[in-house]
Amino acid sequence: MSHKENDGFIVTDKVLIDNIEICDLIKFEEGKVFLYHVKKGLGRDLRVLANQVINASRLVFNAVNEEDASILKLYYKRISDKYFSGNDLSYKNGSNQNNLSESRFITILKESEIVFVFSYSSIKTNLITEEFIETNSRVAKLSFIYCVRDMLRGNNQFLIERIKES
Image 1: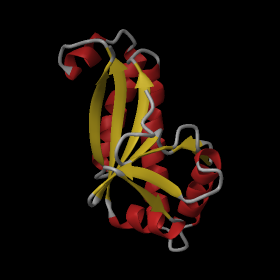
Image 2 (image 1 turned 120 degrees about the horizontal axis):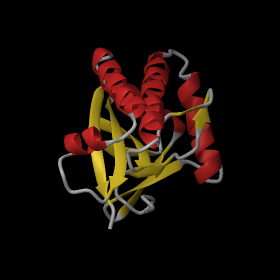
Image 3 (image 1 turned 180 degrees about the vertical axis):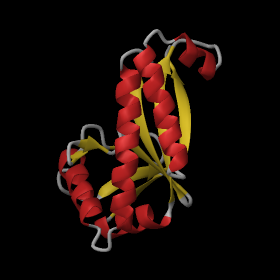
Image 4 (image 1 turned 90 degrees about the vertical axis):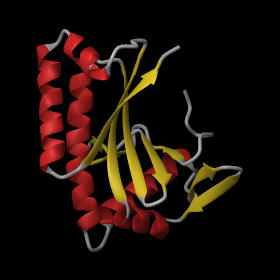
């Protein structure tokens, strides 16, 4: 599923800073920036997803608190080079296309509430908590528990979202 045409999304999949993927998708809403980390299912990828969220949250914390914004400038450049041919980032907002300069991107990230979204696809219809309990890998479950603990300790906004597979 491509999010390029969905309101507010910028694709950032496989854009790395210090070998850390900050997120797969960025979604902009009034006063909030959602950083989506997306995987298919909860098996082995649960552990990868949990570590990705923790590492990204630490990097983003440092990035938004830097005076010179060097991490955010580099991140912007890498997204621009990979997905926008070196041009300004842009995202759809209703029928409009919003351009996002480097300085505006930095300002939004520094001034908005950042929400990390742990997102996975599944065909299941039971409660998300039940689905996590059903996961066979103890290591994956433990990684997820540590992820939740670390995100809450760091006062990070954190959501879990299941994407329904058809």
